[in-house]
Length: 140
Image (cartoon, rainbow, N blue to C red; front, top):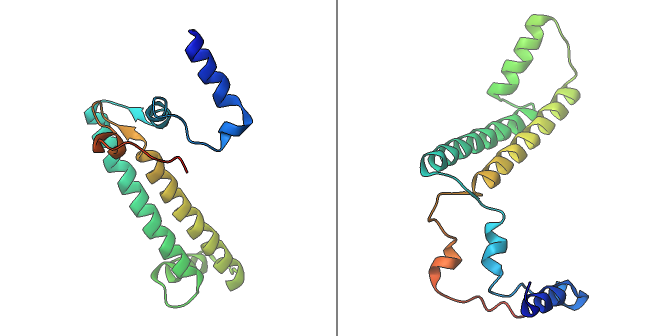
């Protein structure tokens, strides 16, 4: 390691530099550290299916939240009907809580899948900030 590199690494670990953004020569590397570069066919598959799973999960989550209100809900009535056919009698409060918890979990799952899906990039793809040609002036 050269003396110039050693002084930069020492500067970045001091407590005063934790609040400052990284220098521009190391910024893009830090951004790309979270991205996964994959071949174009795999990128297309990941993008399509992660978006599809995310949308279905969020829509289903809102359907569960609607069923949690115990009003006129297709899903709520269907689940109550299945429980009645089996002979189970579940209290409305418990069923409402279950629907609400599952609905929120489904929405969170959809958001998580979408966020992870956006981390994939094909070779040659860059971040929009890299392509803009503008420097970042985040000095304060």
